[in-house]
Length: 248
Image (tube, rainbow, N blue to C red; front, side):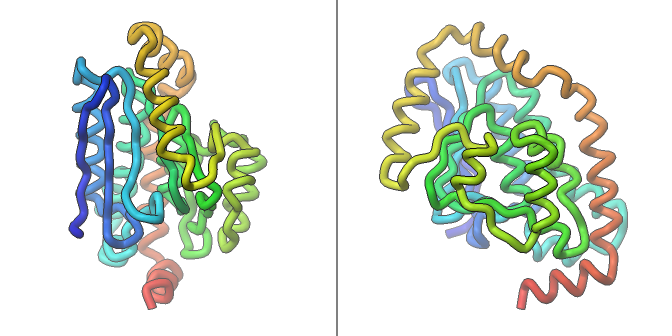
């Protein structure tokens, strides 16, 4: 299968589904497609809420290593990591609540996307990892979103132990996931929750969205400042060698 980001509206629920054959990792073009799809559904009057989901066994493997290896200047580096900043800001600025369906593991930027959801349902297979330090960079762009959900102490634990997977139970206990389910329960529980949420007053839901994301307006500049840090670090010999090692 080829990579895609697609949308569908059913019963007042807007569904965004993404896929990439490399573990649902994101190249920059697909990050932009995700931003545009979120913005498109935000304007769609037939959708009261949005469900964000992926296909396959992995939820999201974060940034595309192939594209990271191709970056050879600061401008391109900042632009690539700004892709994740664009996604998180699109999720934050969207007037509609976003429900995440996390069926499997999330790494790096994938954890940031989960954190950008207003409510996330996950399975016991949804382990998480922030491996950025192990390749010479850091989760700078997604840190505000993740820390907002799980707190700085848990964020530190997740970041500094970048070679370790944290089990889905850990992520649930820290607040990244609102509900933890067995894999076979996820679809039915998601449909039940999303259908109920979509039946509420759209105006009340929109006002609630603004309340949930108050005090984050500065992210419109902060996340791009963080993208420049990552864009600089990805040019280092340490990172280039680490990425090559991961590919092998």
